[in-house]
Length: 142
Image (cartoon, rainbow, N blue to C red):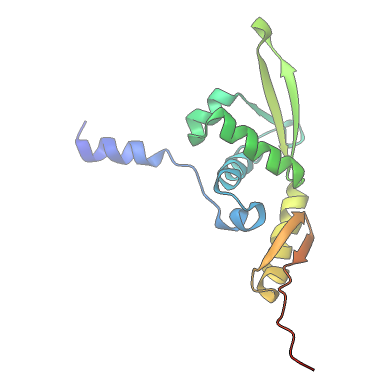
């Protein structure tokens, strides 16, 4: 196989990075994982539930187990995913995931509308809730 064709094949195996997800998650790892979860949720049956092992996530995203755990925790706290752990043979387990698309969609809408109005200078505490960052102003002598 010619080298260019081989490289093109290798580079065709990509993971989407959705920039808007960074604006609603606040971390690159959570963005990467949510992007990949969104991809799999569109191909899932069972009401959008799909499963992956930590090794599969590593193969797809390059995220270590610790990075996956932190990203998953952030996505759960934000209300963007639900998880269910199930035991399989040899006492191993897989985690089933469901992207909470309505929460993600609402957060994106908030980011587009509210984020622009606030100049994207805010802290997201949970989906659809933004807290403006307040700055102390110097008081003027009165």
